[in-house]
Length: 202
Image 1 (spheres, rainbow, N blue to C red):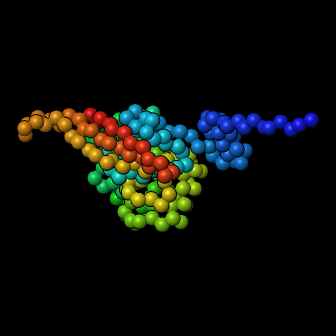
Image 2 (cartoon, rainbow, N blue to C red):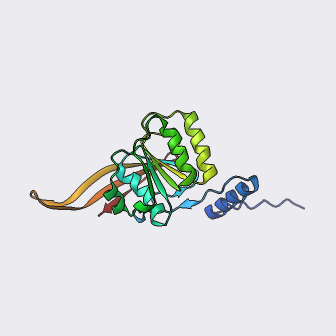
């Protein structure tokens, strides 16, 4: 009797994700859930609880927080002393479910950890460079609380980095008119892979 070669079956992404959630539940670790993103960013980036994401502009910071707010979650902003309430509202962020700590001072890391404990998405604009050890402590808090951290600036380890590569405003002609929309090219770098998309924002 000759041995038959085994057939290699490669599980789909959905199967792998389901198995990972099952393993985490057996180990007592919190399941990484998806968090809604703004419709303009759908298909470009997917937020997951327990992870950090880096951006390089106010628009992207607001855009990543907007999906959770639009779905009824509470969101927070720390270290953003010139936070634009009108811009946040235009993205769909509900200010009635928004916590703002514009100037946390030297305790900004502790303030951020406290916000992570109670909010689904926290946007942080660091006032100083963060070392890997401090970031890992906050990462553990994110996983335990099933929260998401969006950092406007540098962060040691992130799930993905989003960059606004090109911004073009439209609506003003020959010195007259009103700015009515802008075109934004967003690049996402994740695990060494890069993707980009042109967005039109009103």
